[in-house]
Length: 277
Image (tube, rainbow, N blue to C red; front, top):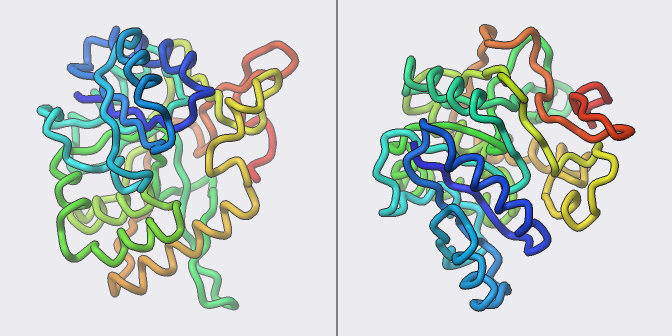
């Protein structure tokens, strides 16, 4: 598969060297691409990065989150792993997720799951985590068929939804889950981490991680983030005219919880040992 890492913060460049090396060492990975989406980063910085990175570096034409799912010509594999620049899985976890995807390539596969739910009183959709079911996998680490990239980026049916992503500067992962569910009629699959697990440097619940590395993500503002993502679900539903998201109750883990590892008191523990906010 091809790995596409979304990069934005120059603070995370040292971490990117470790992450790209981890993906490059996986026998399941053909190519690693760092998609740089920060238009203010000097060209010299990216040039220097290219010299010292186990990945090809592509500069996105703008900061639009929709570029994460662009069908770049460098992608020549059927499977594409889309991930954030602060997630470092081990080789066993990558291979396991790829094996699960190959068993049903119509689905989106990932380690981090959420769900949609309807607030009857407010008459709007909300973004949630429910232990018994899920309908969304996040682009912290998501594997999808390359076919869906073209549909997401080029299909006129999703043009208004892509505009919402640009307006909100959020929710591109939710829209991809809409696309996959609409095209396949299937919900996503959450898989469990194997071996050394998944190191989640961007989780705000980490101790001992530099603020510049931890808080650049959109999801660092937890309460506001959940509200805005619920608004995205409601607006996607409105412009598409239906709700294609489908719940999955079968999973490769004991329950639907966080699988990222956070630093707590000098030890790596599951981030989900603390409350989801």
